[in-house]
Image (tube, rainbow, N blue to C red):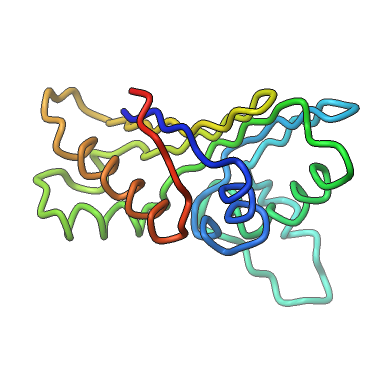
Length: 167
């Protein structure tokens, strides 16, 4: 697990205006401005079945992609005043978990991994990101956690988001 302090302006630009995190699953958000908005990223499959005049395409995944929620979250946040706080919880998608396991030549299978998470938290003037790893099995092997932490740091470096290690 990593806790990183992020450059707020550059990270918010990458989160809300660029495609940096679009391929991540969007699990949930809470944004506090003049109201508090709670957003659950779970997809409701029945919503897609209601469309009768169009070809029905029901996503296989359980959660929305950040790309599908980014503009809405931006519309809640933008304005003359910064939000009082927010938190976003993302997860690496199953295909990308499989790619990470293969690239790093780890002994785990994709079905062993429950999730690889990014937790963004903004409070007053501080933006942090905490990484998380959850497994379907008990293991003392930290190789996946270490690989995920390194991947996250590479993502921030790629999108020129300065960070500082807090833990």
